[in-house]
Length: 232
Image 1 (cartoon, rainbow, N blue to C red):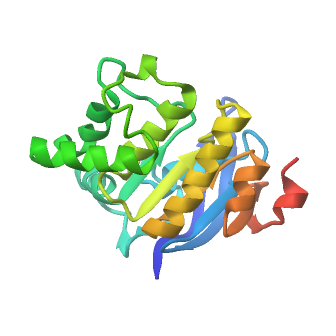
Image 2 (image 1 turned 60 degrees about the vertical axis):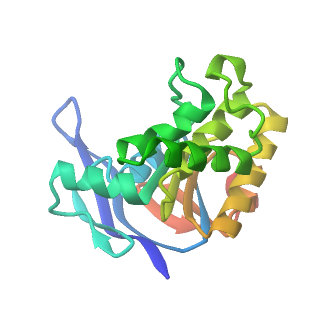
């Protein structure tokens, strides 16, 4: 089942000299339920832009995106926000946890925003923190968590709404080798066990190697690639 689809996706910006800068041009992508796709490419190639378009955080110059069969084009900002909140989870290089809240409260946040009852949200958050190996750290604030623990908390938060798609942008970019490997294993495990479609932008060969497919974003185009050849 295709849960994420990009059709002839293009993104252009106006440069300072008035010329056109093409970031993406004619990108096509289909991601199946439970499939983990790695997108690799040089810094500045447009990987983050692609994720923003796929996750309805930005609007393409041309083309269409569908999430779980729902087309993003023509929707109001409010409608797009509602679709993101129910269907898409995001994990970024920087965890963006709220410093004044505990790990449990951070994971509860999207559920409370979605209108969940406090007790139900707390139970769901505890379950997810257990799932990512942080059952004993639920009452710790971000400052008391290691970098790896903070990022795993961010993953739990992204999973709170039970999204059909998880988008991750350089999720292990700020972690040491040990914590990176643990996070990479977690992504592969979640993709398999929870059957979430994942698109992960990464420079990390170890993470890309765990994906079902690796795609290279280069010269505004997305093409199949061998991770051994495109990731140093």
